[in-house]
Image 1 (tube, rainbow, N blue to C red):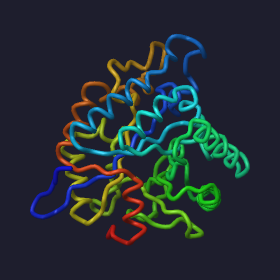
Image 2: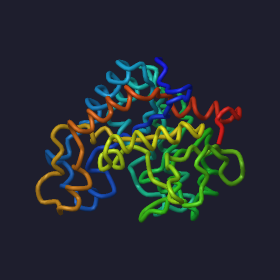
Image 3: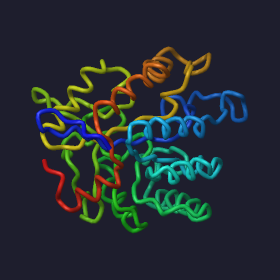
Amino acid sequence: MRSASSCGISRRIALSFDVEEWFQTAAVCPRACEPGSSCRRRRSPLLVDGLIDTLAQYGARATFFVLGSLLEAEPSIGQAVTGSGNELACHGWSHGSLLAMDREAFRADIGRCLGTWSRLSLPPPRGYRAPSFSVTERNSSWVAEELSAAGFLYDSSVFPIPWIRYGIPAAPLIPYRLEGGALLELPLAAVPVSGLRIPAAGGAWMRFMPIRVHHRLLRRACAAGRTPVLYAHPWEFDIPFDGEAGFPWIVRLRQGRGSGARMQSAFSRLLGSFDSITLAELCTESSRGTDTP
């Protein structure tokens, strides 16, 4: 891996992808087209292959959080990720929010995912990310306990900002132990600016934010000794992404703005400016106390 640095300051990110189809996202799912229709074609295998190729071009590595239901339907995704030296992690079964689950339902959801991993002879996942970042103050303690009991080493679901559907505003900006101490939390990137925490975690934030501003925030986090945790979705790289006819303009804007060619360009610029590691690597380093505040 090349060294991306300036004035001796490391420029390193921990990169991840939340692998689900566009029609499984929280904004689209309630209005999505009928099951079995042509708009529900699965494009994730092709898109994941493209992302893996791009990562290889830059000598970068990433974590792919994959839905259990998608992995069961498209086992080639798991083979492609593990075979390329990237990390395969768990995104739950079917993109249901944890805020709509109780503890028993969550345990069953995780068990179903682990059963699929086992049937496909894949290495047990070490990391978990909740759909829609739905680990909040309401459920973080029992989520941590259940994940730890199931053999997970880390979670990366906490967005340390106040937001409409997710977020723990006062959460640390660096890796920390969730309640109980057994599970390491790798929070999504946010950067303090004038007393506010500005999201800098990629995804929609990278699509809506000018690229130079996004990179400036990431450099600021790196200069403070942090390794920013970023995410994106394979569907954000699709061409074209039109959100399908009939969706409200706000959904088309939220899902479509900056997707496709612009996201591909932004991603290439990101990999050209920062080194990228997997979240499992960040977990190992942070557990040893090598990631500084």
